[in-house]
Structure formats: structure tokens, C-alpha cells
Length: 81
Image (cartoon, rainbow, N blue to C red):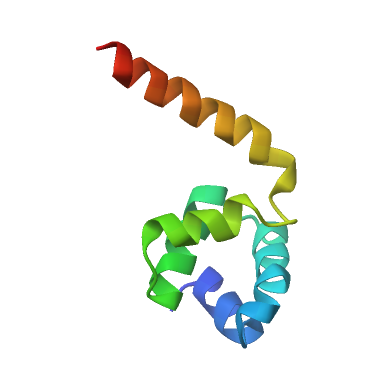
């Protein structure tokens, strides 16, 4: 088991504790995308659901607007092709 998986297992008890888990993971250096992948794997939920949990969390709030802007730019470029 990896370091971040152990942190998840040590702190997660229910969705009520997810914010605590996210804060500890971020403080330990996990990236936003790796957080999404970890949440998806650990909770066996669709990628889109894991992404929403992370994107709209208080822990990652400081990156939310930038992340949405990058996505919009990416999808806009796909529509132009």
C-alpha cells in the first residue's frame, strides 16, 4: 500500500470525513489529479463523481477557478476542430 492510500485508510470513515482526508493528503503533497484517482479507486465511484468531490472541496477551492478555466479552454479547442 502506498503512502497516500494509507493516509486515506487512516482518516476516512465516511463521506462526512472526506474534507479531512483531502486536507491531510494535500498537506502531504498529493496532486489534485492523483487525489481524484485515489478517491475514485478507494470509493469505487465514477471518475466524474470523484472529480466533483475534489474540485468542489474546501481543500482545493484555491485551484477551482483556474482548473475550470483550463477545462473550458480545452473543450473549446476541441469544438473548433
